[in-house]
Image 1 (cartoon, rainbow, N blue to C red):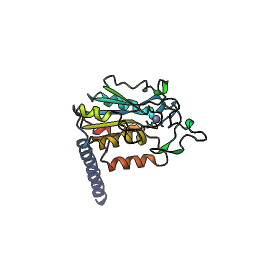
Image 2 (tube, rainbow, N blue to C red):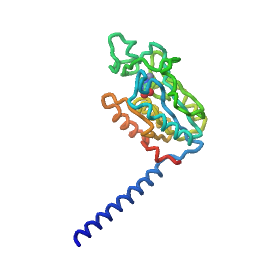
Image 3 (cartoon, protein in one colour):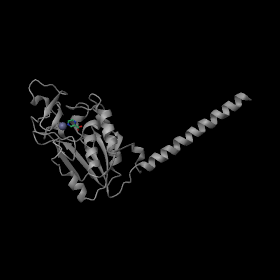
Image 4 (tube, rainbow, N blue to C red):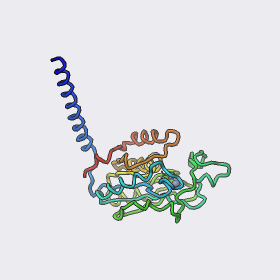
Length: 241
Ligand code: VGL
Ligand code: ZN
């Protein structure tokens, strides 16, 4: 008898847990963004050099491609960003004698991580991943093309004053909402998402559509900084089908 009651109770508790999981999935689904004419999907730096085998490979970076392809079909407005550096760019360790990739240097605009050479314009590594399939993307914003300044953000270069034009483009297009994913979560996705929020866009980052470099705690820091600016971290399941 006692045993039965326990079993029943467990069953009830298990049932309640299933119900509340379903309810919270529905609640999460409601918290996701609408996808309408004022919503833009920004796919950040889904490029060969950021994928396994590339020159600045993000672990499992290529796994974002399928997520991008699947979600992009639901968006009428898609913008791609493309990291696009000249040879000898100042963000490359090879431009700083005695420095190694992933060391820091002080630039006139502030601290800068030094990277392996990557995404040099015209090189195969600068191309979008060959499996990225978003023919309906409307705009490609290139960034990091000035030799002396890096640009993680698709909106503002690392001097934090020079615009790429994306903010003006989205304003003119009437965008009020941005959904982001791509590479790398803790650098170009985070900086672009933060600037989108600062530009007044309601901003969402789709977590499973991103992969991180994670240098010295940079991933946790990036999520905290995005959170502080009101960027919403969501799962693809929260997007309307
Ligand atoms: C990126 C480091 C250097 C990125 C670009 O796309 O996250 N990271 N350049
Ligand atoms: Zn770069």
